[in-house]
Picture 1 (tube, helix red, strand yellow):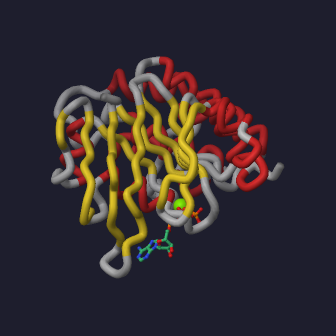
Picture 2 (cartoon, helix red, strand yellow; picture 1 turned 90 degrees about the vertical axis):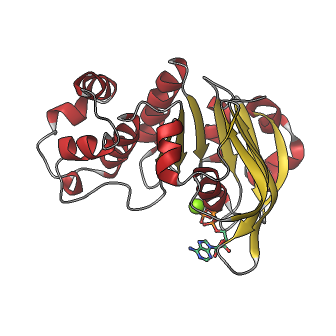
Length: 234
Ligand SMILES: Nc1ncnc2c1ncn2[C@@H]1O[C@H](COP(=O)(O)OP(=O)(O)OP(=O)(O)O)[C@@H](O)[C@H]1O
Ligand SMILES: [Mg+2]
């Protein structure tokens, strides 16, 4: 069994179902990427994995433990870190305060973890006393990722971490994400930059209308003519 197994998730926001028997899995130290068109249900699948959506059917296990009925807060305690697609930093709070907020469930000394985040993203150390709202888009995404790392998650979930950043900043962010994965953390990421994301992904999930359309290794998806034609621009 994979480290995260979210099987046959079916549900929505109270109206019609958005997810239809959607399955997402991630192994420890592995990068899994969810791609698909706008409105496919990628963010909804992430929210379902994180417990923000009532599922009518399906099951979520983390490290072999059934967490289907846990609240998002308890999932954080169980080892999940989630960076949502929007509003993922506190703009009026400083960089350091954002990171401290990230550590809210910890009662131990988190100074070491903050030092690790500053090692990973040196610019955040430099700007630690500035309000996060004054940072560039790419730097704000670093704050959001850093904040999620403050709980020392075993699974880090990122919804479009490179949205609105330049290609160079995207490459840098992907390099940092690879570094995080190399420490043994499982990464589950939604990406609009499908080609670049599948390039660094161990596994990919192509979602269409709330269903799994293609599931394979990143390399196999990149090589699949149907995937290329429909989802990677040829
Ligand atoms: N809070 C909500 N309440 C009701 N419906 C929603 C809500 N959020 C999303 N939806 C609907 O669920 C469907 C899937 O949306 P979702 O945001 O999961 O797509 P996505 O694949 O993440 O798209 P994007 O690439 O634009 O981020 C859409 O039809 C959307 O309108
Ligand atoms: Mg989305």
